[in-house]
Amino acid sequence: MTNKPAQDTLLPGNIEALTAYSSAKSEKVSGNIWLNANESPYVKDVNIILSDLNRYPDPQPAPVIDAYADYAGVNSEQVIMTRGADEGIDLLVRTYCEPATDNIALFLPTYGMYKVTADTHNVAVNDLSQDLLLSGTVEDIIKAVSGSKLVFICNPNNPTGSITPVEKIAQVTKALAGKAIVVVDEAYIEFSESNSCALLLKDFDNLVILRTLSKAFALAGLRTGFMLGDKSILAPIRKVIAPYPVSTVVAQIAEKALNSDAITQMRRQVTILNKAKLTLLSWLEQSPAVNDILSGDGNFVTLQLKDKSCLSFAAQMGLVMRPFNLYGQDNWLRISIGNEQDLKCVKDWLDVISAQV
Image 1 (cartoon, helix red, strand yellow):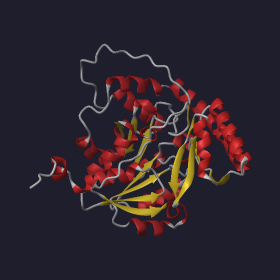
Image 2 (cartoon, one colour; image 1 turned 90 degrees about the vertical axis):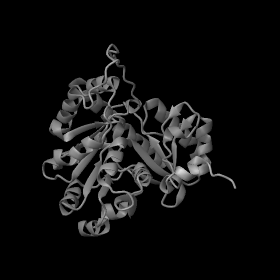
Image 3 (cartoon, one colour; image 1 turned 45 degrees about the vertical axis):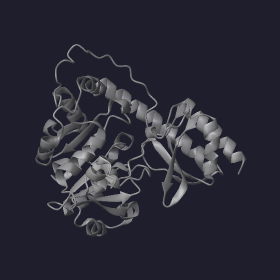
Protein backbone atom coordinates (compact mmCIF):
# COMPACT_ATOMS: atom_id res chain seq x y z
CA MET A 1 0.00 0.00 0.00
CA THR A 2 1.42 3.37 -1.10
CA ASN A 3 0.84 6.35 1.15
CA LYS A 4 -0.16 9.53 -0.61
CA PRO A 5 2.08 12.58 -0.14
CA ALA A 6 0.84 14.91 2.58
CA GLN A 7 -0.02 17.63 0.05
CA ASP A 8 -2.42 15.27 -1.70
CA THR A 9 -4.34 14.46 1.46
CA LEU A 10 -4.25 17.89 3.10
CA LEU A 11 -4.75 20.17 0.10
CA PRO A 12 -8.33 21.42 -0.39
CA GLY A 13 -9.83 20.51 -3.74
CA ASN A 14 -10.34 24.12 -4.83
CA ILE A 15 -6.64 24.88 -4.33
CA GLU A 16 -5.56 21.71 -6.12
CA ALA A 17 -7.67 22.79 -9.11
CA LEU A 18 -6.58 26.44 -8.90
CA THR A 19 -4.98 28.07 -11.93
CA ALA A 20 -2.64 30.73 -10.57
CA TYR A 21 -2.66 34.26 -11.95
CA SER A 22 0.12 34.74 -14.47
CA SER A 23 1.50 38.22 -13.89
CA ALA A 24 3.68 39.99 -16.41
CA LYS A 25 6.72 39.58 -14.16
CA SER A 26 6.07 35.88 -13.52
CA GLU A 27 6.60 35.18 -17.20
CA LYS A 28 10.36 34.78 -17.38
CA VAL A 29 11.17 36.69 -20.54
CA SER A 30 14.26 38.68 -21.39
CA GLY A 31 14.55 42.12 -22.91
CA ASN A 32 15.50 45.69 -22.16
CA ILE A 33 12.38 47.64 -23.13
CA TRP A 34 9.61 46.68 -20.71
CA LEU A 35 6.11 47.53 -21.93
CA ASN A 36 4.28 44.48 -20.61
CA ALA A 37 3.08 45.37 -17.08
CA ASN A 38 1.43 48.81 -17.43
CA GLU A 39 4.19 50.34 -15.33
CA SER A 40 5.08 54.02 -15.45
CA PRO A 41 8.32 54.83 -17.28
CA TYR A 42 9.12 57.50 -14.69
CA VAL A 43 11.59 56.77 -11.92
CA LYS A 44 11.15 58.25 -8.43
CA ASP A 45 14.04 59.18 -6.17
CA VAL A 46 13.17 58.73 -2.50
CA ASN A 47 14.89 59.44 0.80
CA ILE A 48 13.83 57.35 3.78
CA ILE A 49 14.74 57.13 7.45
CA LEU A 50 15.57 53.63 8.69
CA SER A 51 16.27 54.35 12.37
CA ASP A 52 13.04 52.91 13.79
CA LEU A 53 12.71 49.54 12.05
CA ASN A 54 12.96 47.81 15.43
CA ARG A 55 9.40 49.02 16.10
CA TYR A 56 6.21 47.70 14.54
CA PRO A 57 4.65 50.15 12.09
CA ASP A 58 1.33 51.93 12.42
CA PRO A 59 -1.18 49.46 10.87
CA GLN A 60 -2.94 52.33 9.12
CA PRO A 61 -0.50 55.27 9.09
CA ALA A 62 -2.55 58.41 9.70
CA PRO A 63 -0.41 60.79 7.59
CA VAL A 64 -0.82 58.54 4.53
CA ILE A 65 -4.51 57.87 5.15
CA ASP A 66 -5.22 61.59 5.60
CA ALA A 67 -3.22 62.51 2.50
CA TYR A 68 -4.98 59.95 0.33
CA ALA A 69 -8.40 60.90 1.69
CA ASP A 70 -7.68 64.51 0.76
CA TYR A 71 -6.50 63.47 -2.70
CA ALA A 72 -9.55 61.26 -3.32
CA GLY A 73 -12.03 63.75 -1.86
CA VAL A 74 -13.30 61.48 0.94
CA ASN A 75 -13.08 61.34 4.73
CA SER A 76 -10.16 59.57 6.39
CA GLU A 77 -12.53 57.06 8.02
CA GLN A 78 -13.50 55.99 4.49
CA VAL A 79 -9.95 54.82 3.63
CA ILE A 80 -8.04 51.59 4.30
CA MET A 81 -4.45 51.27 3.09
CA THR A 82 -3.62 47.88 1.57
CA ARG A 83 -0.72 46.00 -0.02
CA GLY A 84 -1.66 46.95 -3.53
CA ALA A 85 -5.24 46.87 -4.80
CA ASP A 86 -4.83 43.07 -4.95
CA GLU A 87 -5.03 42.83 -1.16
CA GLY A 88 -8.22 44.88 -1.32
CA ILE A 89 -9.74 42.29 -3.66
CA ASP A 90 -8.73 39.49 -1.32
CA LEU A 91 -10.06 41.29 1.77
CA LEU A 92 -13.44 41.88 0.18
CA VAL A 93 -13.85 38.24 -0.84
CA ARG A 94 -12.61 36.92 2.51
CA THR A 95 -14.77 39.29 4.52
CA TYR A 96 -18.05 39.22 2.64
CA CYS A 97 -18.22 35.87 0.83
CA GLU A 98 -19.03 32.54 2.46
CA PRO A 99 -16.98 29.72 0.86
CA ALA A 100 -18.91 27.15 -1.18
CA THR A 101 -22.04 29.31 -0.89
CA ASP A 102 -21.58 32.82 -2.33
CA ASN A 103 -20.47 34.02 -5.74
CA ILE A 104 -18.99 37.16 -7.27
CA ALA A 105 -19.96 38.68 -10.62
CA LEU A 106 -17.35 39.59 -13.25
CA PHE A 107 -17.65 41.21 -16.66
CA LEU A 108 -15.19 39.44 -18.95
CA PRO A 109 -12.62 40.03 -20.24
CA THR A 110 -11.26 41.79 -17.18
CA TYR A 111 -8.49 41.67 -14.57
CA GLY A 112 -7.68 38.05 -13.78
CA MET A 113 -7.11 38.38 -10.03
CA TYR A 114 -10.84 38.68 -9.28
CA LYS A 115 -11.37 35.08 -10.42
CA VAL A 116 -8.15 33.76 -8.90
CA THR A 117 -9.08 35.28 -5.54
CA ALA A 118 -12.58 33.80 -5.69
CA ASP A 119 -11.22 30.37 -6.66
CA THR A 120 -8.72 30.54 -3.80
CA HIS A 121 -11.49 31.07 -1.28
CA ASN A 122 -13.85 28.52 -2.84
CA VAL A 123 -16.24 31.24 -3.96
CA ALA A 124 -18.05 30.74 -7.26
CA VAL A 125 -17.78 33.14 -10.19
CA ASN A 126 -20.74 34.50 -12.14
CA ASP A 127 -19.14 35.03 -15.56
CA LEU A 128 -20.80 37.86 -17.47
CA SER A 129 -19.58 39.96 -20.40
CA GLN A 130 -18.20 43.44 -20.87
CA ASP A 131 -20.75 43.82 -23.64
CA LEU A 132 -23.55 43.39 -21.10
CA LEU A 133 -21.94 45.94 -18.79
CA LEU A 134 -21.40 48.51 -21.53
CA SER A 135 -24.42 47.97 -23.78
CA GLY A 136 -26.99 46.23 -21.61
CA THR A 137 -29.66 48.10 -19.67
CA VAL A 138 -29.42 48.53 -15.93
CA GLU A 139 -32.33 46.09 -15.65
CA ASP A 140 -30.42 43.51 -17.73
CA ILE A 141 -27.34 43.90 -15.52
CA ILE A 142 -29.30 43.64 -12.27
CA LYS A 143 -31.01 40.48 -13.48
CA ALA A 144 -27.68 38.94 -14.52
CA VAL A 145 -25.91 39.68 -11.19
CA SER A 146 -28.85 38.58 -9.07
CA GLY A 147 -27.57 36.49 -6.18
CA SER A 148 -23.94 37.65 -6.46
CA LYS A 149 -22.47 39.01 -3.23
CA LEU A 150 -19.80 41.20 -4.89
CA VAL A 151 -20.02 42.81 -8.34
CA PHE A 152 -16.60 43.79 -9.71
CA ILE A 153 -16.35 46.58 -12.28
CA CYS A 154 -12.85 47.45 -13.48
CA ASN A 155 -13.06 51.05 -14.69
CA PRO A 156 -11.13 51.75 -16.91
CA ASN A 157 -11.17 48.06 -17.68
CA ASN A 158 -7.99 46.02 -18.00
CA PRO A 159 -7.23 44.81 -20.67
CA THR A 160 -9.82 46.49 -22.93
CA GLY A 161 -9.62 50.05 -21.58
CA SER A 162 -13.40 50.40 -21.78
CA ILE A 163 -15.23 52.89 -19.54
CA THR A 164 -18.55 52.27 -17.82
CA PRO A 165 -20.30 55.64 -17.30
CA VAL A 166 -20.46 56.83 -13.69
CA GLU A 167 -24.21 57.33 -13.92
CA LYS A 168 -24.71 53.73 -14.99
CA ILE A 169 -22.61 52.48 -12.07
CA ALA A 170 -24.66 54.70 -9.76
CA GLN A 171 -27.90 53.18 -11.05
CA VAL A 172 -26.58 49.63 -10.66
CA THR A 173 -25.33 50.39 -7.14
CA LYS A 174 -28.66 51.90 -6.13
CA ALA A 175 -30.58 48.90 -7.46
CA LEU A 176 -28.32 46.50 -5.53
CA ALA A 177 -28.60 48.29 -2.18
CA GLY A 178 -29.00 45.69 0.54
CA LYS A 179 -28.33 42.89 -1.96
CA ALA A 180 -24.72 43.22 -3.11
CA ILE A 181 -21.57 45.32 -2.88
CA VAL A 182 -20.43 47.02 -6.07
CA VAL A 183 -16.63 47.09 -6.24
CA VAL A 184 -15.19 49.59 -8.71
CA ASP A 185 -11.51 48.97 -9.42
CA GLU A 186 -10.02 52.34 -10.36
CA ALA A 187 -6.39 51.27 -10.75
CA TYR A 188 -6.13 53.35 -13.94
CA ILE A 189 -8.44 56.22 -12.99
CA GLU A 190 -5.75 58.91 -13.07
CA PHE A 191 -5.66 58.44 -16.83
CA SER A 192 -9.40 59.18 -16.97
CA GLU A 193 -10.12 61.27 -13.87
CA SER A 194 -13.54 62.49 -14.94
CA ASN A 195 -14.82 58.91 -14.77
CA SER A 196 -14.06 58.35 -11.09
CA CYS A 197 -16.88 57.07 -8.88
CA ALA A 198 -15.41 58.60 -5.70
CA LEU A 199 -18.17 61.21 -5.46
CA LEU A 200 -20.76 58.42 -5.33
CA LEU A 201 -19.46 57.29 -1.93
CA LYS A 202 -21.48 60.00 -0.22
CA ASP A 203 -24.68 58.48 -1.63
CA PHE A 204 -24.13 54.71 -1.36
CA ASP A 205 -23.01 52.49 1.50
CA ASN A 206 -22.77 49.41 -0.76
CA LEU A 207 -20.03 50.87 -2.98
CA VAL A 208 -16.30 50.18 -2.60
CA ILE A 209 -13.56 51.73 -4.74
CA LEU A 210 -10.10 50.23 -5.13
CA ARG A 211 -7.12 52.46 -5.91
CA THR A 212 -3.36 52.03 -6.30
CA LEU A 213 -0.08 53.93 -6.43
CA SER A 214 1.30 51.41 -8.93
CA LYS A 215 0.25 53.05 -12.18
CA ALA A 216 0.10 56.83 -12.52
CA PHE A 217 2.04 57.39 -9.28
CA ALA A 218 4.94 55.31 -10.69
CA LEU A 219 5.31 53.19 -7.55
CA ALA A 220 4.52 49.66 -8.72
CA GLY A 221 7.39 48.29 -6.64
CA LEU A 222 5.96 49.82 -3.46
CA ARG A 223 2.83 47.61 -3.52
CA THR A 224 0.50 50.25 -2.11
CA GLY A 225 -3.24 50.39 -2.61
CA PHE A 226 -6.30 51.92 -0.98
CA MET A 227 -9.85 50.81 -0.37
CA LEU A 228 -12.48 53.55 -0.25
CA GLY A 229 -15.94 52.98 1.16
CA ASP A 230 -18.50 53.84 3.81
CA LYS A 231 -17.15 53.29 7.32
CA SER A 232 -19.88 50.72 7.94
CA ILE A 233 -18.71 48.55 5.04
CA LEU A 234 -15.03 48.93 5.97
CA ALA A 235 -15.53 48.08 9.65
CA PRO A 236 -15.67 44.26 9.14
CA ILE A 237 -12.66 44.46 6.83
CA ARG A 238 -10.67 46.16 9.58
CA LYS A 239 -11.25 43.01 11.65
CA VAL A 240 -9.94 40.74 8.88
CA ILE A 241 -6.91 42.66 7.62
CA ALA A 242 -3.44 41.58 8.82
CA PRO A 243 -2.27 43.37 11.99
CA TYR A 244 0.64 45.19 10.33
CA PRO A 245 -0.07 45.35 6.59
CA VAL A 246 1.91 48.53 5.89
CA SER A 247 5.66 48.65 6.47
CA THR A 248 7.34 51.75 7.88
CA VAL A 249 9.33 52.22 4.69
CA VAL A 250 6.25 51.94 2.47
CA ALA A 251 4.39 54.47 4.60
CA GLN A 252 7.24 56.98 4.37
CA ILE A 253 7.45 56.75 0.59
CA ALA A 254 3.68 56.80 0.11
CA GLU A 255 3.30 59.89 2.27
CA LYS A 256 5.84 61.77 0.15
CA ALA A 257 4.17 60.58 -3.06
CA LEU A 258 0.92 62.17 -1.90
CA ASN A 259 2.14 65.67 -1.14
CA SER A 260 0.84 68.46 -3.35
CA ASP A 261 4.01 68.85 -5.42
CA ALA A 262 4.22 65.11 -6.10
CA ILE A 263 0.56 64.98 -7.16
CA THR A 264 1.13 67.90 -9.52
CA GLN A 265 4.11 66.07 -11.01
CA MET A 266 2.05 62.87 -11.36
CA ARG A 267 -0.68 64.70 -13.26
CA ARG A 268 1.89 66.29 -15.54
CA GLN A 269 3.31 62.85 -16.30
CA VAL A 270 -0.19 61.48 -16.97
CA THR A 271 -0.75 64.25 -19.51
CA ILE A 272 2.50 63.33 -21.27
CA LEU A 273 1.61 59.61 -21.30
CA ASN A 274 -1.90 60.25 -22.60
CA LYS A 275 -0.45 62.30 -25.47
CA ALA A 276 2.10 59.57 -26.20
CA LYS A 277 -0.74 57.07 -26.31
CA LEU A 278 -2.44 59.08 -29.05
CA THR A 279 0.77 58.93 -31.06
CA LEU A 280 0.99 55.16 -30.60
CA LEU A 281 -2.64 54.78 -31.65
CA SER A 282 -1.98 56.68 -34.86
CA TRP A 283 0.92 54.34 -35.68
CA LEU A 284 -1.19 51.27 -34.98
CA GLU A 285 -4.07 52.54 -37.10
CA GLN A 286 -1.72 52.97 -40.05
CA SER A 287 -0.12 49.53 -39.71
CA PRO A 288 -1.37 46.78 -42.04
CA ALA A 289 -0.05 44.25 -39.49
CA VAL A 290 -2.74 45.28 -36.99
CA ASN A 291 -6.18 43.77 -37.29
CA ASP A 292 -8.07 45.58 -34.49
CA ILE A 293 -7.42 48.16 -31.74
CA LEU A 294 -9.16 48.58 -28.39
CA SER A 295 -8.39 52.24 -27.81
CA GLY A 296 -9.97 52.81 -24.41
CA ASP A 297 -8.57 54.60 -21.37
CA GLY A 298 -5.56 53.62 -19.25
CA ASN A 299 -1.80 53.69 -19.80
CA PHE A 300 -1.93 50.90 -22.37
CA VAL A 301 -3.32 49.93 -25.75
CA THR A 302 -4.65 46.46 -26.54
CA LEU A 303 -4.59 45.36 -30.16
CA GLN A 304 -5.06 42.31 -32.34
CA LEU A 305 -2.24 41.31 -34.66
CA LYS A 306 -2.97 39.72 -38.00
CA ASP A 307 -0.16 37.25 -37.29
CA LYS A 308 1.09 36.65 -33.75
CA SER A 309 4.43 35.41 -35.13
CA CYS A 310 5.25 39.12 -35.47
CA LEU A 311 6.12 39.00 -31.78
CA SER A 312 9.31 37.10 -32.58
CA PHE A 313 10.71 40.27 -34.14
CA ALA A 314 9.86 42.20 -30.98
CA ALA A 315 11.80 39.67 -28.90
CA GLN A 316 14.82 40.04 -31.18
CA MET A 317 14.71 43.79 -30.56
CA GLY A 318 14.54 43.35 -26.78
CA LEU A 319 10.99 44.68 -26.79
CA VAL A 320 8.76 43.03 -24.17
CA MET A 321 4.99 43.43 -24.50
CA ARG A 322 2.07 41.36 -23.15
CA PRO A 323 0.45 38.72 -25.40
CA PHE A 324 -3.17 37.89 -24.57
CA ASN A 325 -5.87 35.40 -25.35
CA LEU A 326 -9.06 37.42 -25.87
CA TYR A 327 -12.43 36.49 -27.31
CA GLY A 328 -11.16 32.98 -28.01
CA GLN A 329 -8.22 34.22 -30.10
CA ASP A 330 -4.53 34.14 -29.19
CA ASN A 331 -3.22 36.99 -31.36
CA TRP A 332 -3.94 39.88 -28.98
CA LEU A 333 -1.25 42.12 -27.53
CA ARG A 334 -1.22 44.80 -24.83
CA ILE A 335 1.38 47.57 -25.05
CA SER A 336 2.09 49.75 -22.02
CA ILE A 337 2.74 53.42 -22.69
CA GLY A 338 6.42 54.03 -22.09
CA ASN A 339 8.66 57.02 -22.64
CA GLU A 340 9.54 58.52 -26.02
CA GLN A 341 12.51 56.20 -26.53
CA ASP A 342 10.47 53.12 -25.62
CA LEU A 343 7.73 54.00 -28.07
CA LYS A 344 10.27 54.74 -30.79
CA CYS A 345 11.28 51.08 -30.47
CA VAL A 346 7.62 50.08 -30.86
CA LYS A 347 7.48 52.21 -34.01
CA ASP A 348 10.58 50.49 -35.37
CA TRP A 349 8.98 47.10 -34.68
CA LEU A 350 5.76 48.17 -36.39
CA ASP A 351 7.72 49.34 -39.43
CA VAL A 352 9.42 45.93 -39.68
CA ILE A 353 6.26 43.84 -39.40
CA SER A 354 4.21 46.22 -41.60
CA ALA A 355 6.72 45.84 -44.42
CA GLN A 356 6.21 42.06 -44.34
CA VAL A 357 2.41 42.08 -44.66
